[in-house]
Length: 122
Image 1 (cartoon, rainbow, N blue to C red):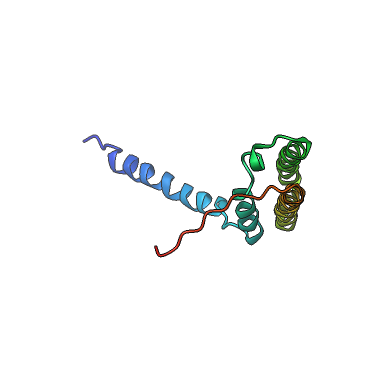
Image 2 (spheres, helix red, strand yellow):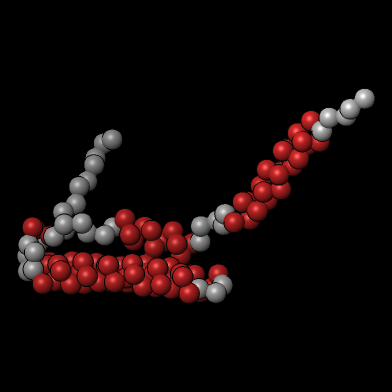
């Protein structure tokens, strides 16, 4: 009587994904506090010039934002531990905050304000 390997094949087919699951779970890390703050700053990036005025300060702001993004990517690529990644995210968030502040301050001195929308009685 010939014996088949179907039960063994099924067992191996079920075992392989079970072995891969812990590896995937270990690869997914929770988001760091610094990363959350930086992403909040990223959501506040000014997408169009204040008052529609495209002056040198607007272009400087856009260049500095792009440079900050490139620097973050480089810092994360060269990070050797979690502390390096935290430092990279913290630096990125603070750079975005400072650049936005400088641009808004300059434009407000020129009489332009950042448009804001307020909702009442929702």
